[in-house]
Length: 431
Image (cartoon, rainbow, N blue to C red; front, side, top):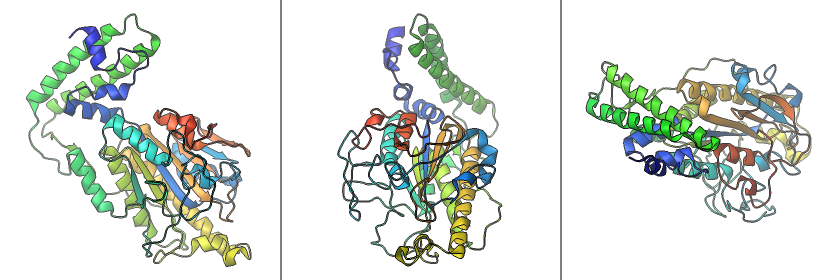
């Protein structure tokens, strides 16, 4: 194939080319493997409550369970409800997150824009699905189902299908796991069908020709195009090496081996947090990691929410934040219960990171933990905790009107990220 035709077929003939769409021009099995190696993934963690003292929101104190990954971690405090409080920047309400007006809220509608009627997780999921060939655009998992089926609250719902309809989380983790494994052609046994040696050798011959021509094509190109070609070379060479290992391995399988049980997670659980929460959330974390590993989806939203609004066996945690309808502040026991729940959720955050790390996909995953409010029902200074966002450490954005959603969209590569929600966004929270 002539070099120019090869570049056209891979989407590299222009200066403003993109790597992921180019992979779609490869034969289907090869393109799917390449996409899996070059994937970006997003996990949003929604929480009703978070730590009360922003001075302790670091790995030396309340975020201690995340200390093993401190080199990847960013904590931002000082955000506020005048434009970027938690209900806004975490996608549950409308400013920056969506141009919808929720049916159970009277709030200003900020207009259309490029993403009219979609929250950030929905926009990211659709973008990555188109680029990476995942089965579904997004996955929303709930921690604990509500017993009142028609209860619409922001503690359960985080995104919108249209201007008037919420999307509810999925609670049947087993169904999601089976669908993910089926989509990936996964297996849980060590032994499997024989390796397709002829097919792997044929793929490698194609890859070697592509690599040779890509190496020649970098000569005389701009630095932008040359850099993108080098990225493709690295991805294709990794595929070639994978094929060689499969050919050399005894008893190799043609399916993707997938771990089908959640990791253990030892920690000291406060007695104020019901014991049932632990396996529930760990199963949810595992389901999310499995779905991402299998490329069943590239965007997952997790609801670490135990509000007590119609949830069987769940203490009225949300009522603890404003007892008696704000007639008095929370007492010591109520605050202690809220603090115990916050600590539990950080432990579950750490477990999620371990799941992603064990599946080998942590490096390519952006995780954003975005709580709903302080335990005193205060929407000021609610922190955002991000992993793999770029900068690390702890910093404050004292009362600036900024938007974490723009940062997420830019990290993923969504065009027009600055116009999210129908108004110009400043960003700068996690990037």
